[in-house]
Image (cartoon, rainbow, N blue to C red; front, side, top):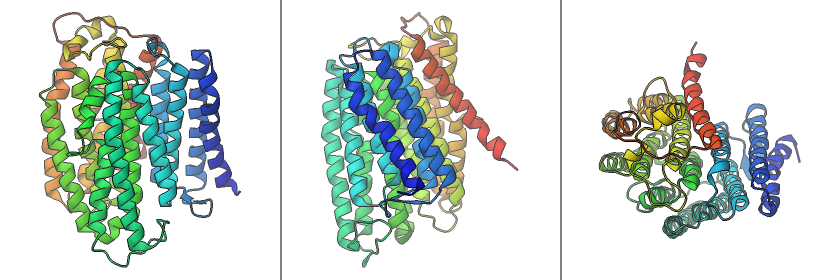
Length: 460
């Protein structure tokens, strides 16, 4: 093997080897430390690949070191690291904490494969690996809310994988190749159908309207600890899938790609934002917010068509910054939701956050920072994500930018309700905020603030 392949193999080993050992750990803390060490080692290997060998082929062209994919993967690994860190003292009701950490690494291994996939076989293997691991993560708390949510997630996820197989089957029929780079389509007539099946498949995972039905029940009902992981990892897996597909079929489809993806983006933004306004439970509000955020990310996916007027660099910056904002905010806010909901209990109302700033002022400030980032408040990461995404398509599709801006305004109303519940609601909630959870939420807020400073540092 050459050097890039050796380093990528080291990343696989860093995540894969502990999966075989952690389930047998009798000490929860040792399993927790091992999982974090594995993620750090894999992240270091990925960073080395991205900086030293951009564009390098892997294993005879089966994979490729793509800069945007590597950046998305690093965002996912860092977010997973913080989410895992925050779980140590919050898993007293979990029957098998070491198993939870092992399955988390299994999901991360699936995303690692997705990030380099150049063939349908590697892509589908990685997709199924991540999907099965994510179903298991949701179910592992084993309370009635989590088990029911996991069943709904698994049923819809099976449909998602079936549609993905179907879309790849059509691509294989049209191109005669399992290799993405070598795909040459004899006819473009069915490519729009491929895109529709692909959006349906990936839309299930990301919560894109109208394939979102499982998401409010799963994110809104299940224990927030696994959701703090899954909410970010599912979006990252979906964006990686659409990005890899865009490299093959977005160019030939051109305006059809932009218009089809934009239609799903608009429907998803409006549905997620308007429905979130009606929610009284904290987790359900965050769930519908996740749907709306999928709509914003689809603005960037629409921009991958690269039709005249699209700013390619801004598309890539927008996707990266929006994923940073989304990943850290959802991890931090769902971990915060754990402070007002004990293991096995029903989801908490939004008002349960009342008094958080009095009892845990730094945690409250971190939660507010993450909510403001989702809102798009400058100079946080969410502001730059929306700015780059909306400006990237404004010359080619000004109507899409205008609709996205309207939705950002709608979203501000329910994000303000979350901040109001923390700082201005009457009453005093009951909070369980262990040290590891507080550190993770604070670190998520710090990462969001730090990412917001990057554009200033890069400015000429």
